[in-house]
Image (cartoon, rainbow, N blue to C red; front, side):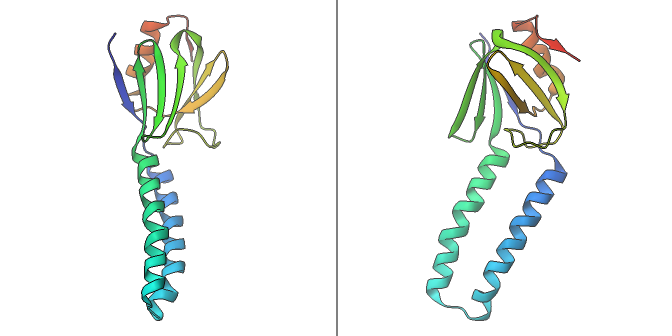
Length: 142
């Protein structure tokens, strides 16, 4: 079976809001250190902020949806993975729900399956839906 990988669509609005907040908090935490620099304060800031920034980049840029061996695999970076059998998918519908989900965009697909639902935001959405429906033609769409 063919393996297809779809990156998560990245919303400029969501991306901007996230980075605006991060830069604001970063500015507030770094200003006291800039005004009175001490080596241990700089080290603490680096130890604190480098993992935060790496984590955010992995989450925002490393989110992807893999269709492989009749499963939809949702991955966030190298860590988080959810597997959904494509035969268990009942429907795919448009959603703009703001609930936390493995989607880097506010334009999302609600995937309902036998054990629950999840919101995702694949790029090339029409191809993604078509490929899922080629494996499970009973999937309902809008």
